[in-house]
Length: 307
Image (cartoon, rainbow, N blue to C red; front, side):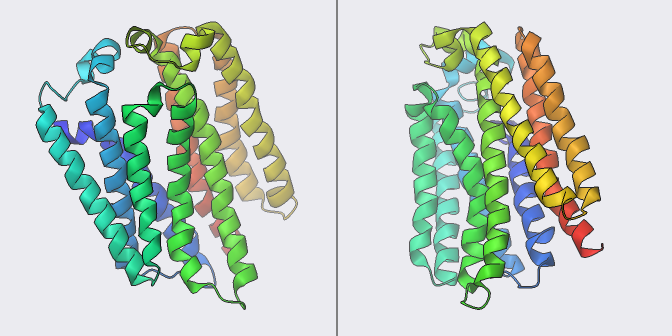
């Protein structure tokens, strides 16, 4: 159980759930079958999860002192799992993830694609070891990694079956994936700043250079408040242009109730948030927004299919 907590298994389950929803709740319901077999796609999910697990693990290794300050009850490395064993787990997870990526890349005739897994693993290491301490750079990297895990679906499952005849159709499918990747980036970027607000005391004592430390908690909270209006505005525009305009009222209602409404709740609560408990709660609200956002692709696809 300690190992599962170390790799943040709940986040990994969310990642796997997201990739499975996009495959079986979206791509498999389209007219053009995707490139990967079910077994190959399972390996893609496993590879992504292993790389992400390695990222969480190396982050915990480098964050031992900070975690003792912010979340002493959650410290595992150096307490129940030795640092040496944690490094062994880290290497094993990355070997599996990169190895599976290499196997899949060769299976679709694009061996160069395997470099993507190497780049992601290396970026996560750099993030944990040094970039995390740079103002906003760490937040951007974490948000980008989640977005890439959406885009990678299109790279491996759509690109290999691309032809001149199906290019317009696949372009629409890839655009949908890209839209969700942008949504995931925005929400996760805001969430990372909220997590910095939650951990500001421990980060300050460890010499970190996060936005709340540079600008202060009050100013950063107001920045997050105004920033949270951006995804709300984008979503309302998107719902009106693509769902309501095309009479997709079920999809529109779902997005308004389960995505926009929680974001509005987040915005209202963010204005007065001050304590660590407040920021932890708001971070969890954004996690729910991500969950329901992912699920929306299946809800909308099914509503179109059975309209």
